[in-house]
Amino acid sequence: MGFQVPQAGHPIIGLSEVVGSGVDASEFAMMTNKGPIRVRRGAAAHQWFASQDACDWLGSATASSVAGLQAASAPRPLSALGEFPIGSTCGLPYALVALDSEAALDAIAIDPTAPPAAFQAQCGLPHGLALYFYVRTGEAAARTRMFCSEGGRWIEDVATGSAAGPLAAHLAPFQGTFVQGSTRRAHIEVKSSAREGARVEIGGAVLRVASGTWAALPG
Image (tube, rainbow, N blue to C red; front, side, top):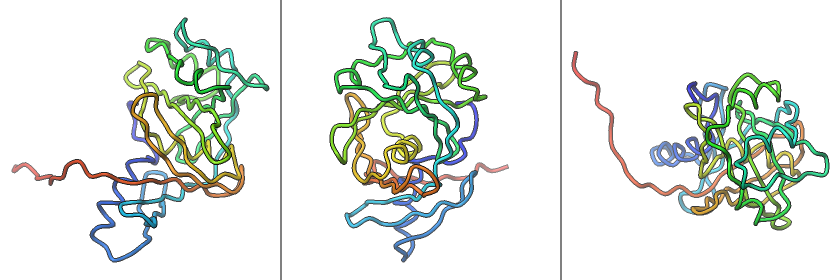
């Protein structure tokens, strides 16, 4: 992205597992660039939840601006309103793009060379705007995919807690699971009570894949 994110989603959940293993507490706070965020242990082993801020609603993205980013072979996103809300719970803005089927979600293909600056300008935001596509698959379930610009190219992220927060708020009241990704699928547990003015909780299980230490170089 080229800048420090105000508050990350999944890195906080992963860090909670590391920090939590060294403290005798079921709940504690961590300081981020956006401010403190509280985390708590879940009922299952290695499960953690973070309490994000209430969602800030920052306008909307038009269907045509989103469709302009997609490869020619991709389906156009569908919405009864023809526009998609932009929300943020961690300081990063996401356009929440509703689709009408899982087939449409799986077929989404963003042109990696589409200029992000033009899309962001159309939405009235300076930088950092990303896309969170979703389709409801049940009363307490949705499938999602997230695309963001990195180094001037659009890429897909496999798990994005900072995007799950705004979507949970948008669907509030909601308590359930977002399954993100098209091939490798991440399960994100979310809970929200209101679209505005209420904090959002996101979390999931942490799997440690490596460990190590940092050492300062002499001189």
